[in-house]
Length: 191
Image (cartoon, rainbow, N blue to C red; front, side, top):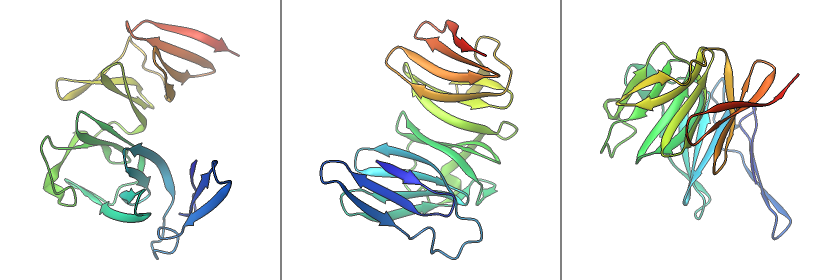
């Protein structure tokens, strides 16, 4: 279990051994703002969305391997979510939604990134049903043909909760809704 804190600390709980480990590098980095906003595990790597960019942590070595702070014109943006999709790194930032360019190998270089939507500030990104979705203040979006499009006319402030095998769960106002694999949305709970 990986827990990121606004202070920059990361707590790691090993349920098999009932032990805790602590990662202090971000908290002690000297950066003014150093919050950990999101964690995305892919194989041996943990992609950490922070208030200054993305850091990559090697789980087997238990050490940081890379930090990305420049995404094209966006310098040290606040990354609210990071996800991998089709061998690319996607990030929802306060400067828009960015992605590593196809085939890019040096992600520390600003030219390895492209801003896919400079006016849309996403709060969460998740792959689902062979596509990647973004929840934003202006609706639920899906990445198609190298651009973002509105899903099913959902244009309110939404937040993605989870991607399951057959459904993408999200909050829309005071309701919890799901989007199934056929792109049909339904309300699961409304208050």
